[in-house]
Every structure is written in C-alpha cells, then in structure tokens.
Length: 158
Length: 166
Image (cartoon, rainbow over all chains, first blue to last red; front, side):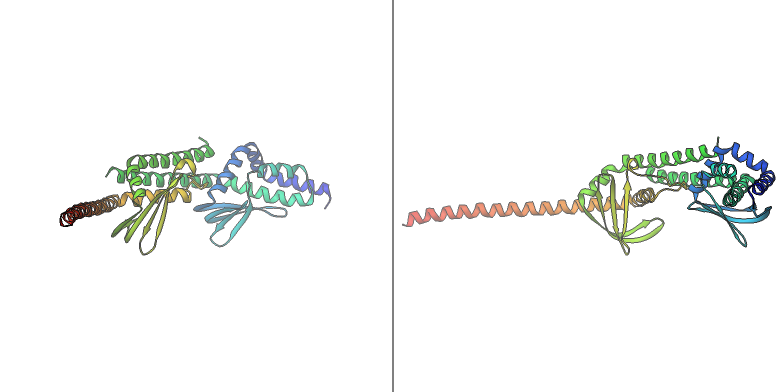
C-alpha cells in the first residue's frame, strides 16, 4: 500500500470516528484521569449493556453486548461480555499516542492507530456506564469504611 | 466535581477516617496495651470472639515495637495481628480498599475491643496471682529471717553457757 493510499485510508477512518476523536483530544486530561482511575481500581463489575467498538481493516464495527466486568491489568483492558472478551491497550498516555500515530503515518502506525482509537472510542461511547460504575465503586468503598468506623466507635463507647 | 477529584478526595477521606479511628483507639486503650506488653504472656483459657466466631484462646501475648503493637492469640490456629501507626504506613490501596497493614490494624482494634473485658480480667487475675506469690515470698523471707535471728540468739546463749561451764 502506498503512503498516499494509507493517508487516504486514515482520512476516511478519521472521518468515521471524527466526532469521538476530536472530543477525546479536547478532553485529554479527562481521559488520562479516567484511564488512571480504571487502572487503579483494576476490576469493575458492570452488569450492564455496553457498546463495543472494534476498528477493523476498513470499517468500524459496533457491537452491543452485556458486560459482566471490566478488568484492567498491566496496561491492558479486557471487557468480559457474556460469550466473549475484548482486549484493548490502556495507559494514560493513550491520547498522546493517538495524536502521534495519526501525525506519523506508516503501515505499522495504522494498526496501532486503529487499536488506540478503538480503545478510546469504546471508552467514549460507554462513558455514562463507566463513570457510573466508578462512582458506584467509590461510594461503596466509602460506605464500607463508614460502616467499619461506626462499628469500631460503637465498640469503643461500650 | 471531576471524577478524578472525587477519587482523590474519597481516598483522603478514607485515610482520615482510619487515622481518626486509630487515634481514638490509642487514646482509650494505650494504658491497657502498655500494661499488657509489660506482663508478657497472659493466660486466657476462655472463648474469645474472633471476628464474629467464638474461638478458644489459651493465652495472648502483646509486644510493643517502634511503629506498631504486635498481638498473638494462641488458639487452635495462632493468630498474629499488628496495630500500625497510620503515620508510618499506606492506608488505602489504589482501588480504595484498605491496605493489608491497614486491614491488620482494623482487625487488631476489632478483636481487642470485642474481648477487652476478658483480656483486662485475665490481666488483672495475672497481676493478682503475682501479687499473692510476692506476698507469699515475702512471708517466707520474713519467717526465714526470724529463724535466723532465733538461731543466732540460741548460738549466743550456747556460747554463754559454754563460758559458765568452762
């Protein structure tokens, strides 16, 4: 494939995902923070439907599936659906990497662009669900500690 | 508030809550803990409540180290716990759950508080037993002293008698 063809392919590809790509780059800090939190929490029980985006050779595939949990380990995010799992690269520098790989086009960068875009687009499209679940985890952890503190304080008053 | 701010704030709040709990616990129980460390092994011989389960505990041992208190409960399974000073450890993991050291500290507080009465009773009994033993020793010592005095008086008399008879 010639460089021109590749550039054209990326142009089409970017157009397809333009809105999401722009939003992601604009909200860079947000996505970096979101990925940091996801990596910190490590495991997220979801039990909800999510939209899975896979960027294939010349098209963007969108699948809706019921997600049991999302697992984040060693810069990899695995989304566990009922029947299958989807693996994505995940680290806080992903938005930077996306920008870089779109600037410096080459046969190998296109593959990595696709993968990075798929990750960020999946995060973007499922933001309400992911944010909601993270907030739930934060609330649950705080409630657990509150309960514990109350129990021990009660024991001390006896 | 941003999601990241919420995450960071929650981490801080959890840390503060555990630290406050530890400070209150130490304020209320430092005297008992210090006494226990001085006593060494304390015979219990009773069922203690170990996180909701009743378990027969033969004895307990408490030691004090620079950064933490250490407690060992001798039962069917020996249980070792540490009460860490929150100033010297990480309290919360990145997934917002307490770290292993924080968990041990919390377990220490719960087990100690659930059984404080029994532990204090056992320590008191041990102190009383030791006091009785000391009193007994003192009496024995005094009695021995009395015998010694009598012996020296008898010896003096015998000497006197010897002088007369010679």
